[in-house]
Length: 474
Image 1: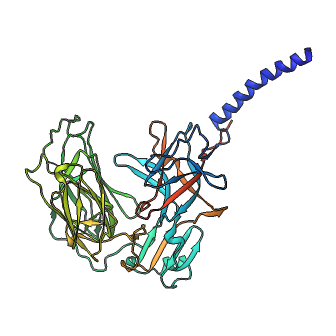
Image 2: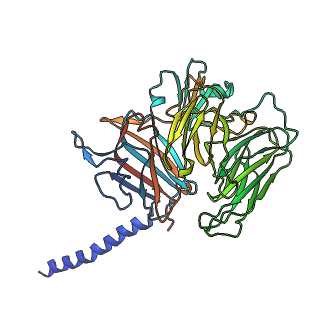
Image 3: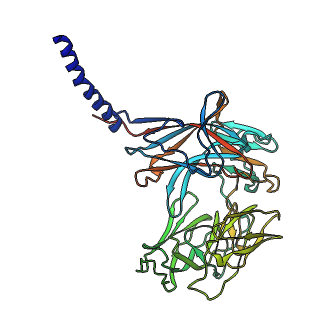
């Protein structure tokens, strides 16, 4: 009896020590590697459920006994709660794809505006292409006609950039105008742009000069600074200008007077330069003056309303080569019909995003009769035909018409998923330091553009995360 009692005492002593040791390892992660395996039918302390319900079906089991959830809308997301800081996150997703052209996975990197870091899980446009294919590591070159024997040959003797579409890959050869002359006098773009914008311009042995005229409309709480950042083709900073808040951080709708913020440089070498106007939705740029001949806006523009600036609506005219335009307004008085070349697009109600496939070829005029519209475009936008240029290759998107755009090459950084027992598996590698940790959580997302239009779906079976940091040095 004494021996049994002694053994029980030892066990009662060792069990809490063992639990404490296990918790210490889980908490401090001495190895530097923390793994979370998450079959969707099991609850996790670190990974929340897929949401929202209108885009993600209920958990169910197939005939083989596999539990999964089906994504039917874009985007679907979930939250991860890391208990330590990490340097990298490797996410492995097990899934099935029913006709979804592109599936990407990533996480939120910034707010106001939202920006996500996304990596490919599967691209059916590449996987199912009948074009000639050259694969080297995680790089793929598709060719309408077999011209290049290797990717090195393609990069060393490239075709014109207009013939190339890219997917998660950058071209090493820069954009250049064969015949370019600088402007002799400045030009003004009299358009109201709300919030942040990303632009590109072309410079050839000339200085860069911009004057941004803007107003702080004070519709939202908080300070509203404006920063103009200029970077070169290597992403190096060339110039920075910053204006602080107007002193009114309330939401009293009292607009500031027109202010200006200038950006000037010395003579710059030839190349494409990016200009980022970083600010809040409270700041409206009312006009842009520049000596640069070419200026385009990337990914779309937010055409601001004229309230507090003009008494009447001002129509806005811009030009684009986009083959797909999406638009919405936030105000009932700005419900309108937009003309897009020979077509028209009705914005029927506030907060209703509508999309138009553009049939006209080449540079197409777009007339927004009342302004006050958020525009999303798959090609640059310019406010004058003479200002338009396309500095970047065509992006391979679900609706990209390679024939219409005369694209003969697709250059991609992409590894197709592996298949086992009818399920696909793909792993994406993310820099954890680039992800936004908001209120102790990361927001991960599945991006599935065109999933509704294609009546497609994605079944998700398991999401596993491997988070790494340097091991502890005792």
